[in-house]
Amino acid sequence: MNIGAVDHVEFYVGDAQQSAFFLCTAFGFRVCGQAGPETGLPDRRSLLLRQGGIEIVLTSALTAEHPAAAYVAQHGDGVANIAFEVPDAAKAFALAVERGATAVEQPQAHSKDGTEVVTASVLGFGDVAHRFVQRAGDRKQFLPGVMDIFTEDPDRGEDRLTTVDHAAICLPAGQLGPIVAFYEKVFGFSQIFEEFIEVGEQAMDSKVVQSPSGQVTFTLIEPVADRKPGQIDQFLERHNGAGVQHLALLADDIVATVPALEARGVKFLETPDAYYDELEQRLGRPELKIEDLRRTNVLVDQDHWGQVFQIFTQSLHVRKTFFWEVIDRHGARTFGSGNIKALYEAVAREKATA
Image 1 (cartoon, rainbow, N blue to C red):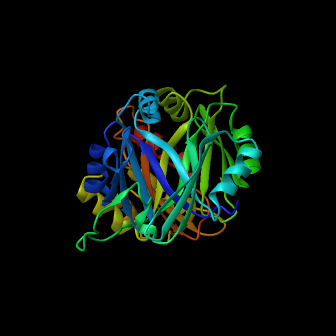
Image 2 (image 1 turned 120 degrees about the horizontal axis):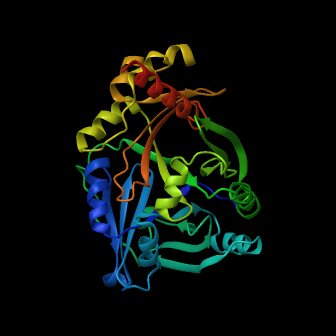
Image 3 (image 1 turned 90 degrees about the horizontal axis):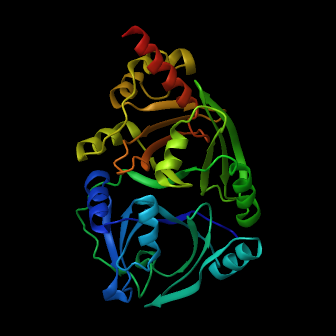
């Protein structure tokens, strides 16, 4: 299949313009294009947002028949399609269906002024699809003949977020193994990491699958059914099924990025002081200054390859489901799961001394 990077991520939302306003105001994205009735799509309104190498499409249904209407009714706003770059979309689609995937959109070609894009979609996990995207010509045109592209603002400001690092996906208990096997068989992904995470009376299983290119990574998580319900169970209940819990966006300098985003209105989760009091004893001296991490609430974990710095936003979703992660990798290839237990213990220590 030769899957490359994440081409774009499409959200189904109740109000594309309102969602775009938030992402542009708070995270520094820019609206670069739109599609809708005026471009031959009478059933939807889609807006294209860009920052660095990240492309996000926000789609709202204009009729009850468009899939976004049913999606938003069931889940609220959320990720509906994670698109993959491929050299041959029709071939990738045919292979996926042959290997057991459910077809969603048959191959379609879109061309204009020397730019051609071929797309096709299959179902992934839950009701989240994967769109194969084959591009030739000017990538900025995105979907020629369908998406109207706006003139780029020369004073657009600095891009602080560069790429989609990974997606974290919550699955109902019992689905983790079958979904991992599905991605291995259908898309040629490999399992690169697994971990059983136990926090107090709660527990979850996690496996990470990645494309051969190393550019598409999914952290798959399921709750342990015989343990006390936790945040994964809560997501599944409020989201009404499997879905993307968060997207991690890569930053080159997280200590500078977090205050810049906070100044724009992004609300991040706070980290208890006890976490930083024990940090050097737990991990040794981190590559970034502890006082800078404490000031910005940034977490740090490490693996055999290096350290990873991360922070999570508060969820502004009405159902308190989807949120964002900002991540900065200093060689680390894993996902900071050690922070889950460290945070739990830090909160317990602060409560004990309060």
